Length: 349
Ligand SMILES: *Cc1c(COP(=O)(O)O)cnc(C)c1O
Image (cartoon, rainbow, N blue to C red):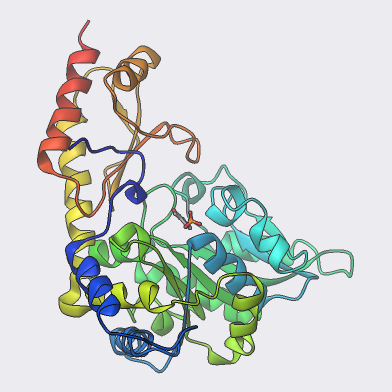
């Protein structure tokens, strides 16, 4: 079966997610709207995983998770600090602004070394906060980090702590877009609590879809005061699944026996394999060694056309980083090797 390197959402659901999806189906009639045993079970497992009594809500996708989480953290006159390549800025069709009734995204400058890695720094945050303090400027309220970033890099625990420190000093809340949170934790080898609430993160959008679920993301409130009335926000936005168990039960499969980490480690390892196989091909310019499950590379235009002609799918529009080659929980070594071999052949003079 043909695999692709366009996105980790090209992959289907992993066997463990499928298993619990079917178990949920076999569990007879269950209350709707999240009152079922499966939602209870997966929510408890997320609390166990993070070793804290957080509030957890399941929504259909990452755009809703981010948009609604940010809306819960902001008034309409507030602003959210992020990078120019942040998914909330470039890929959510104005969702965060829409659901917050107009909170503005304040984008950090694009030309610093950190920005070229898709990262915010304490300095960048400080600069946007102190730029203006008058009534005419949308008041900064939230810092949003993406972990792992849109450019396939990872914030270290120290980096998150440093940004959190400046956020605290400036009375800002800290949001983490964790669409690829699993890949970041797998790369860092730290405990998931260490990179989130123990480092000062208030709200995490914990991605499940790209990690092997059929559908669904978890919005995790470590600062429980922020989740007041969040259930209403989810419902109003059309994000409250009536048969919630089919979103929540597959999470049991990811969380049991650390399948989420195994899936992420595998995807990361496949990106490393791909990187090693293509890095020294003449004409291929890898941007940086992979930290998680993507490889970014500049390829000659005719080579890109050649790869498309051979049926490979991958994106070129992500964050100006050239071609993005993304591996998933089920990417096979054979697919990686076949892609690398086609690429090598096309690069021959
Ligand atoms: C995939 C992704 C999301 C979620 O996108 P949806 O398509 O709305 O599920 C959010 N943030 C980042 C960084 C992503 O890569």
